Length: 156
Image (cartoon, rainbow, N blue to C red; front, top):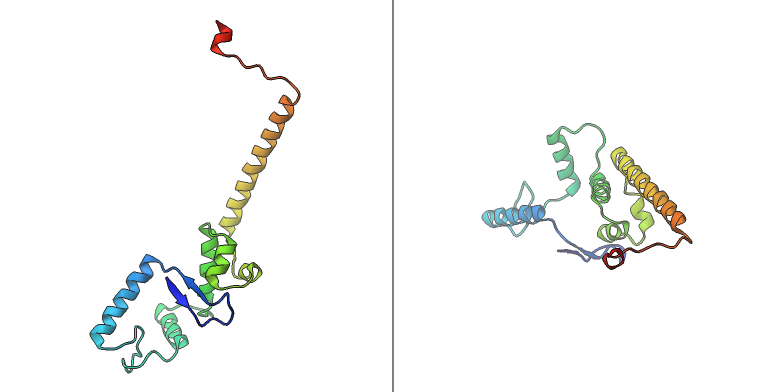
């Protein structure tokens, strides 16, 4: 779990569970920091006794190294997380809490369903609708008609 006590709102001050991959990565960073003799998990590349000066600079450098074309903001990763979380089955209330939003309406601005998600949702709806029609037809057919129960004793 990671705690963020510095959020702008009460909802933004929250505890967020970390993935196993992230925990492993952070453990490697802590080990590396120990080897360098720095107290910082993210030390400056110029002086390991000071923290990195800007996450934006590190992001920009990573984008250049990855040769990503176009405009790619650090904040875009937050939108990607929200979209993928919903695609994996996360409900909006839980996602809202993870993102630190006070309202699900704000969370909905972050979620961008992909074409495949829309197709799967329509298929689920179609199946649900068909099952509902079948169940309604069965209920209508048996409504008011006594159902005979045959037991083994009645047959003998």
